[in-house]
Amino acid sequence: MLTRRQILQSTSSGFGYLAFAGISAAQAANEAARNDPLAAKTPHFEARAKRVIFLCMQGGPSHVDSFDYKPALTKDHGKPGKYGGSLLKSPWQFRQRGKSGLWISDLFPNVAEQADQLTLIRSMQCDQPLHPGAMTQLHTGTAQFLRPSLGAWSLYGLGTENDSLPGFIALKPSSSGSRNFGSAFLPAIYSGTKVGRSSRVPQRAARGGTSESVADIKNPALSKQQQRTQLDLIQALNREKLRRDKVQPGVDGIIESYELAFRMQDAMPALMDTSKETQATLSMYGADGGPTEDFGMQCLRARRFVEAGVRFVELGLTGWDSHSNLSEEHKTRAEMCDKPIAGLLHDLKQRDLLKDTLVIWCGEFGRTPAAQSGDGRNHNNKGYTSWMAGGGVKGGFSYGMTDEHGFEAVEDKCHIHDFHATILHLLGLDHERLTYRYAGRDFRLTDVHGKVAEDILV
Image 1 (cartoon, rainbow, N blue to C red):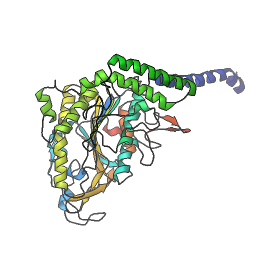
Image 2: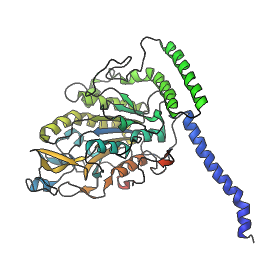
Image 3: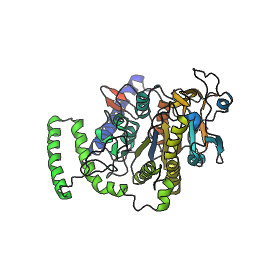
Image 4: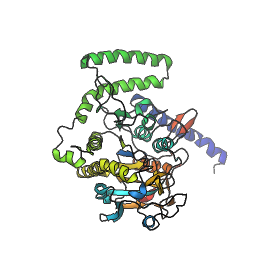
């Protein structure tokens, strides 16, 4: 019979080998990522979704006027609210929609027709009651520090399916949102690529780009072969600096972004050109004129991008911050995006893309049930609604609950960390294992928090 000492002596080399093998595998993965950081990577476990379209509603759309039906709010209209002010009933009627019977208001009549594709998360919470912090936390998991965005983490974890296109695209982002689609301390190649410019961003003369495209993607003064020769020279200088300095993440990012931009010159114009889309398709998205045209074109291009292999596409609509005149302002914003969003969901489904494309709709917070300045509502981060569709979530399903008036989440609370953990899980990524070492510690999107909302998964 072997003693404990003999067993340990005979197996110690085996333990050492296992440790070495684990370290070697991690080093090999890191080396592969350095050689080709956008190469498709194997997820931690089987993914339900391969790609994400994030519909970001900036300003804080009102949940109690859209996706969170509160009969008590109508019954108690005009009475004092829980946190001050007078309760304000919704000007829109709620109805049960589809076979599932989800309650959705007339503010979104077209999206309501897609009710059986939606999971409504009616118990969202975040830590920040003000726009900048809440919007940053929605995108990065924190409001205090510059951290990688959800799109950057997704691309870092999975790579891209098309190396001629960015893996993460931000369509017409607002001028103040760079940190919300940046990579922070992740390698620069994982940052979102801005495509088009928000109507709030001043137009400027950009060589080789238009307001609908990527700025400075081409140099019209040079042929493609001349550009290639010029790029090769610049890259040789960059690589020489890398050789001398050993580690230069900034130079790494420059080299990779130059090469990607060169490849994009052929792929991007074809994807941006919607002239071959049928009139029926343009009409389905509302991209053929009227108040829906701009957002409809964004939704159409989002579909074209994910169809071509882009991992993460974000597009958004500003103007939901209705402290007064909510009935008119929300109506105007909803008219701009309702038909395009419904068209996007329908088109993804008919192309068999919805099953593995996760569509997310969310603002940085909701709004209070109590009135402000007449018929407006104030910010509310204690309880609000987001929804998901496709990509492994249940259709026609409601998760969580706010109190009888919609002030705060009371059941199955879904903090923004839980929201992020669930999105990563749907992509096949364990939010606790998706880490990046920086400044002496391992960082992750959910920090030390996050719980997957298992009940919404198919």
